[in-house]
Amino acid sequence: MAIIEDTVNTQPHILVVGDVMLDQYWFGNVNRISPEAPVPVVAVQRTENRLGGSANVAHNCARLGATATLLAVAGRDANADTIARLCRENDIDARLCVDDDLHTTVKLRVVGHQQQLLRLDFERTPAPAVLAQISAAFDDALPSADVVIFSDYHKGALDGVQALIQRARAQGKVVLVDPKGDDYERYRGATLLTPNLSEFKAVAGRFGSEAELTSKAEALREQLSLEKLLVTRSEEGMTLFDARGAHHQPAKAREVFDVSGAGDTVIATLAVRYATHGDWLRAMHEANVAAGIVVGKLGTAAITLDELENALAAE
Image 1 (cartoon, rainbow, N blue to C red):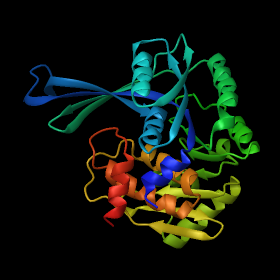
Image 2 (cartoon, helix red, strand yellow):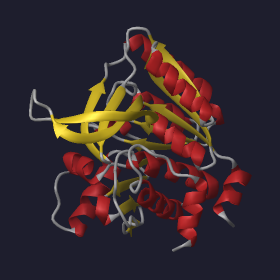
Image 3 (tube, one colour):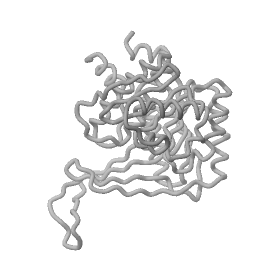
């Protein structure tokens, strides 16, 4: 069955919880060096706002044909308004818990001649009171979700993630986590974690062979009571570890232009496709193909169901 048809027939509902941000891009030309300091002068030609962080995960879910609900923390500011507008335009049900003292997280990238020259981050940690709002809103949104994604960018929205995981699992929900930092105990009991290779090494330690990688991955999976562990490995593809062993997929990218947001696409594709057909290995293959597409795009980007279907058909 074509993936567009099976997604439309299934219409999976994905609940995305995590750190939302606005990705801003200033595109321009660089023709000279500043006389004030040895830095390029960018003559800005246009600006663009894109959904970032957990909002990019939800964007990918929606573009892949799922019903996407986004639960996150934002400030009471123009950047939060922009995120809310972009979510509406992209069919995302955004439920933003407002912290009056918070500045909505922004990542501003300056790009000259298709090359990123500078990134500026504007961020603060949310107050405990707004995290209580997240918890209550989570309980409201959870019953209708087929899969829950926790998108952790270490900005504070998921400080209480362990309790949320437990509540989701108690209701029989599939829980996927894109982790951050080195305290993976907070993700205990999730269905699946998706660390990249450097994140995995920071927690499990370095390895010198595939056998050692498998051993460390299995130890981490058992330690955290995970059903599965997916390690994304850049140009080496990705490897899924479960009770049956290691399952590897080589990288599919023909040209790598920008890796920002690739992890968002991977976890979103895993969630939507698994919720559609219930096959983890097939979902991993589809996520791997999706990653190969999105790294060929400039900046934070989402994949469409048409793009994924065409790429799979071309294999």
